[in-house]
Image (cartoon, rainbow, N blue to C red; front, side):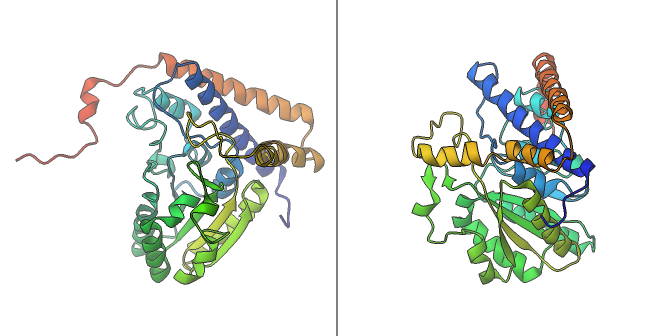
Length: 326
C-alpha cells in the first residue's frame, strides 16, 4: 500500500476482520456441539478479501455473494445478531429464518441474498449494474465468486455482456486454490483463472494478494472508482486460502500439511494485519486486546440472544413468495 490509511480506518478494518473471524469460530463450535441446525461453508482465512473490498463501499452500492457469504455480509454491514438469528432459523434473522448459512443478506445495507449456485450470482450482479447504468446512477456492484465459478458457462456469458455494455460492476474472484476438494490445477490451464481470461472480454484485471487487506483495499479503490466514473467493469483475482474445508464435513485430506502451514500459520490475514498495526505504531497491544474482548462479548451476546429468540410464525411461510392463482 503506497499510503498507510488513517488510524480510524486501519482500526475499523481490523475490527471487522476480527469480528468475522470470531463469528465464524463461534459458528464452527456451535455446529460441533450439535446446537445449530443445517450446514456451513466458512470463510475463515478470507477476511482480508471481504473487508478490503467492501470497507469503502457506500451503503447504496450493492454486493453479491456466494455459498460462503458470512464474511461478505458482515463486512457490508449486517449485524452479527441478525446473522446469528438467521443461523438458528429465528424470525429476527436477516432473512427471517428462511435462508440459513448459504442464503444470508439484507438489501437495506446493499447485501443481496447470497446465491448458493456456483456462478449463479454473476448474471444477477450484471443485471443490477445494468439497472444502475440505465437509471444514470453512480452506484456500483461488487460481486464475489470462487475459482471454480470461472469454469461455469454463466461466468463467460456474464463477462462478455459486462465488458460489452460497460457495466459498473467489480467482479472479485476469491481464488482459494480449490473448487470444493479439487485443486484448480486439475480443472484450469491458467494460473490466474479469472485475470488471465479478462482480456478476452475487454475487461481490465489485477492479481492481488488476497490475504493483505491493504493491498485488496487499494485495488478495490481503483476498480470501484472506474465503475463509478462510467468506465466499466474490472476483474480482481484475490489469491487467498480457506482455513477449513469446503463445508463442515470436509477433513481436507487433499491438502498437504506444508501447504496448510504456509497459508494458515504464516499467511493468516487477521494475525498479520494485527502485527502491521503494532509495527506502524497505530495502536498498542493493550488497545487491541480491549477491542478484541469487546467483539468477543458482542458475539457471545448474539449467540445467547439467537438461542432464545422466537421462531417465525407458521404464516410467515406464505410471505415473500410468489404464486399465480388459476
